[in-house]
Image (cartoon, rainbow, N blue to C red; front, side, top):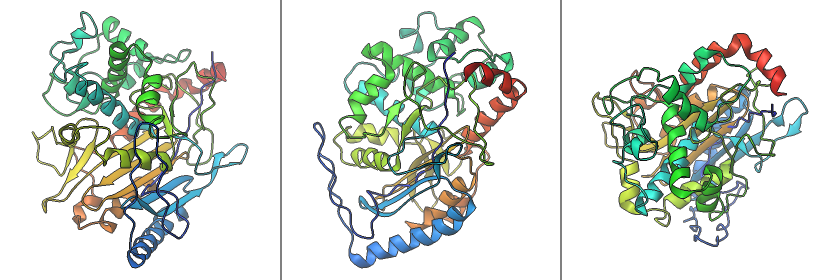
Length: 414
């Protein structure tokens, strides 16, 4: 059995690197012209820099944070901080080029890869899954329902955890096969309600591979990572010889691997705050996607219950009574926490990645919303329907079921 590693990182991103002065324009790529930061007047630059510094030093850096933070305004980095260790066992230093596991922020790349195939007429969002997976055992589910978490499919992290299998590491194909062979009960009828489910994005990655004839890691590298010069970003697959940055419990103890470390599409992208800023800026230029495609991705699709929280096509969003809106995605996998927020009205970005579990990451991010715009106090509250930390509950429930045999599994995979 191959060794499994788990990286965790937290990053807050708003531009390029912070050096106390305005950043220089990013270099151009072979395929895309990197946007030139609009720049900030000195007074405004110092205002946001001091605001971010004071906030994160008090809300996060003093609370055991280990990872990367990056804040940008108008494409200019106003605050950037990297602290801690890439590996707490060896005390290897963490720097801004160290790729960290961004967990469910990976879903934004999976979703946009699907939308790229839609723009090229390689698939349609209303295609049913039977088109890609013959005799798929759940009828009436479309690509769009997978993207928006409205498929009603059961979450593989739940039903496979109940098998308590310790001597394997499930692949995307294994998850698909389990839907045919086990056929666990669905959570809901198709398009009935929002139900956050990692199975959806495991299947989307398989659809990308079927349509393109390429592996999911290779396709994302070709379409996004290489053209955008995201040189420290990759999709981890179990057959890789790469050694991803590990993740750790809040105590600093190494987070042991488990049977769910090998799927991608729902997670398993490693990146940095600086690379994620390139992703953010590229999405804002109109070079990657048509405006109507981006608008559809950022449109709320689960409106059966009133809430400021909602989900589009691979993106979470918060829409406030005063009309303010931003899009984002959080992530957690094992010791990895991540936050990626795009404030379109203010042209600001907040990215946090950490590889030692720290719930203060989410709290610090929530309390930072009003640093950039007039968002309501409710932005600091969770919502019973669209719980923005639902990644946590999914991971923790699977972890709890596996815990009795975790040591046995780990001894076989190390």
